[in-house]
Image (cartoon, rainbow, N blue to C red; front, side):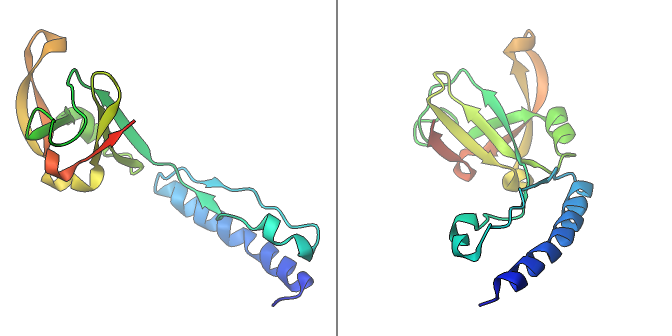
Length: 152
């Protein structure tokens, strides 16, 4: 085990690389947050001062509410899930923090989780949009078998 003085020196040397990595992640549009640095007052308190990591990155989940009733894949009324209009997805894809979509049912008790990792398996279809007078709009759809269904 390191002496307390050795630990403190090593800990202080770790600050610079954390900032360098945070700058790199920022260039990738991850919007990192450096977690607080705190050195224990004395070595006997090391467990209380153990950190959970150095950098936190934020992911984005796009939430859509649908006028559908469902609790799971079995009672989801269609074989595919409408993710979003294609132009909106393409705009959001420019942000590397996008982690997926959550499609929430009518009563907001359950959601269908659409991971962005399934993006290559999405298809497009022109569908009538009731919020725009039935106008046909191009949407991305994903097979419901690629999604997870959760209770909120």
